[in-house]
Length: 279
Ligand code: MG
Image 1 (cartoon, protein in one colour):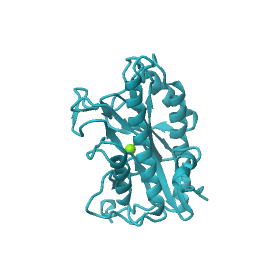
Image 2 (spheres, protein in one colour):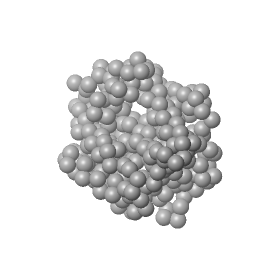
Image 3 (cartoon, helix red, strand yellow):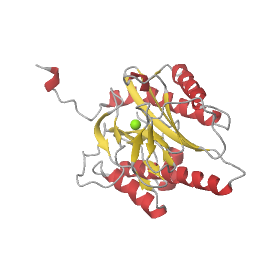
């Protein structure tokens, strides 16, 4: 029988979910190391090296390097650079907002996660407030999406929760061309995870579903352009942008955020959801 005719289920077995814990924690380590290191004067390229060390110390390997032509552990999206940005050696400055996206592969299983860091500029309180608020709304939109996954019947309810929160709390734009995804043996798998309501309900949410939930939010319009390096995507109108992402597993006991050391407990507590460790 042709392997190409086999349709792999999007649902993982309990044993497979357990194998996704280690790559999740490797990405969590990299996020923590980068969050600890971000300050004015640090370059995205230095953060890339810090993330690679954390992933390798955890026994994993950077999986973004498996994308043909990509040679880095992270994408570092500064200000109007919104996604897939090659880390550069320009030092970060006060007033910058940078999203740091990292993934790991360990034992053949993948993780994918991102944080945004707003670097305060004491000389520009308005700028500081703007970047902190953009990051906060984006992070909270992600947690709303993750919380909805815990109770949803169908996956596309996640995008409803994300959009509901963003629109109720801001006039920010939600990028529609960049979406979350299933994750497992490959970093990008079915099903797509939308950040806005769509007409289809999406697959059933049940044990074995593992998805990366990753809203990307702009302070202005939602149109993007690809830079000359053929990777870096920037906002067409130059507006600021933010991204937060976690890889999340649905299992028989509940949900568990694979890329957070606490399984998402701190982020989900205000929303009344308690993550349950994968047995
Ligand atoms: Mg992703």
